[in-house]
Length: 334
Image (cartoon, rainbow, N blue to C red; front, side):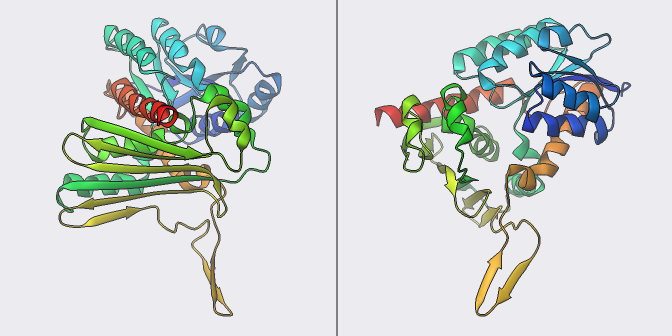
């Protein structure tokens, strides 16, 4: 194992700040030395909250930071592929938030570059793989405890947002399947050991956020994927949950079934009174997957220190992107 991995983070929005705090305070072997954002207020936050970290206006400037080992990208999806390529060409290891790109062809360009630099590691942020519940489900499936898996159902729901902040970003997000369903797609592929896809169908609605129609996006998406081995996976992804954030998966096999994420409360507390039962819902994905983000960061640093490989690489990212884009196309063509 080598010494500390010197990391520079690019992107200091809501998710970027969580990653930055983890890298600075909670990841053994990580040393956060630089942070970049084009927004002055975000750089000011980093200078206050992350003592000793040097701030920059962008990725290009950050890449020149002395002794930098790795770059951590938490930037808009439309920038991911080009920024990963720039960091690889600068000789750095790269962590990039999902998805890798808006189109599979752009993933191919990154894959070719990464393959030409095999000593540099590239990891894509499929953090749900690091959630203890999903990881345990994967272990049980691999051990044959539920037999041959033939059906998987997933549901990921974001709470209703009165401000509809995501509508603003929808034109560059790639759509709900690429932006939100990509985690479930990756998990299904992971549970099925990368099974080949046969067909993809999709439907959707935009009842609560009709403005999404301007970019052919929806606030509820439904998709079915069949695999060449006969397995079938169904997906529901939503931005209209009235009970808070929730991420669920049911896996059915020939010997048994697994349910992941069902009825996870904000606090481990169920209140029963006057013939009714109440469970406090989760506010957002940070509450549900805070531990997973931390395990993910530790896995990247450990991979860099040991020489790899990373747990989720660019090939996985391309496969998930291809399925999400097929869902997006199926939604349009019916």
